[in-house]
Amino acid sequence: MANGKNKIHLLSKSEFFLVLSFFVFALGFLIFIFFTPNYYKQPEPVVIDIPHGATLSTVIDSLYVHEVIPNRTNMKIISYLYGAEKKIKAGRYKIPNGLSYVKLVDLLISGTTMLEVIVTIPEGSSQIEVAQILQRDLNIDSSKVMELSKSRSFIVSLGLNVDNLEGYLLPETYYFYSDATAEEVLRRLKIHMDKLFTPAVQKQMDKLGMTKHQILTLASIVDGESNYVPEFKTIAGVYVNRLKKGMPLQADPTIQYLIRDKHRSRVVLKDLQIKSKYNTYLYPGLPPGPINNPGKDAIMAALYPEKNNFLYFVANGNGSHIFAKTLDEHNTNVSHYRAWRRSQN
Image (tube, rainbow, N blue to C red; front, top):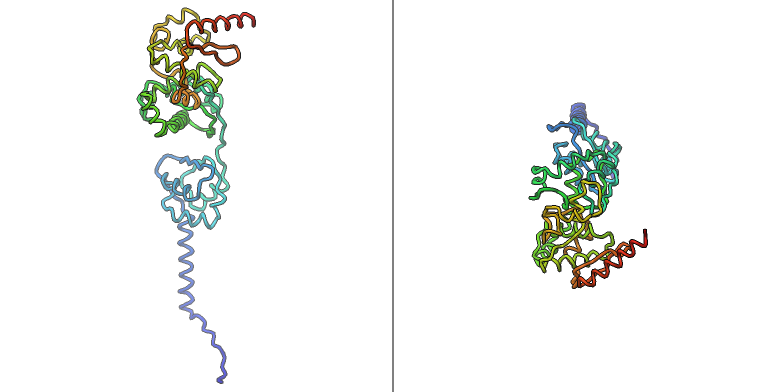
């Protein structure tokens, strides 16, 4: 067996400098890629919303679409090196121009996000009430909300062909960023309303022979008549019966809609003579449009009204109504209600 020592082959000086040069170049290239500022062309800052549960890929796609970053792959590499896929905070970010990939990741991990505000819009809220709520909770000028609600260009941008947004904004509880604009809020409320009108709902409207506008109009009257959800479909059934017979709806909420600028809600006899298509005592059929923004329950009631033979109803003093098939029966119920009111006074 031959004896010998293992020889250690060291790099020559030229080879050493070659390897060193490669690593210096690679390091410099990485520094250039990840630490060099990236500039976008649109006005700054660019606002990016990251919802709860958003994946890293979704965030990076959003940054790329908004031209904050020029390359998705570079952003993915530095994000994984930082472990950003588990650290990015949900929220609204205002991204200044000229951030490098490294600084951008740092912003998404540890930066300050815009606070969210809870905004609740009750079912059956009028457009004026919506505007007042947005001013109170989000400091959005109520006059701006009302202006947009009637702005032809803004309404068309929402894909609608109506005179007013009243009826097309879904009342719900929402989370909005504290710097939300009137346009942003109204657009979102309209989108949420659209989500109710699924293909199955469209099929039901075809069955009823009613348009979306007519359904929202009927729903707004139902929402204006009662706060007791279990009777919504019964009330809708009464109005459908009246429409089929060509009877005036005689719905007080439509009169209240006409007199709301007078800052009173109680209807008096002279109000019933107001010359307006919204006066359902004078004109048969549905009024020209919604009288408030109906909630989901009222919309479902208009879409799926109860099949009944009722033509009349009156309050019972307990928050709901008593229904009648004949005028004589209804008059008796009205007498009972009036007697109850007198007893309360």
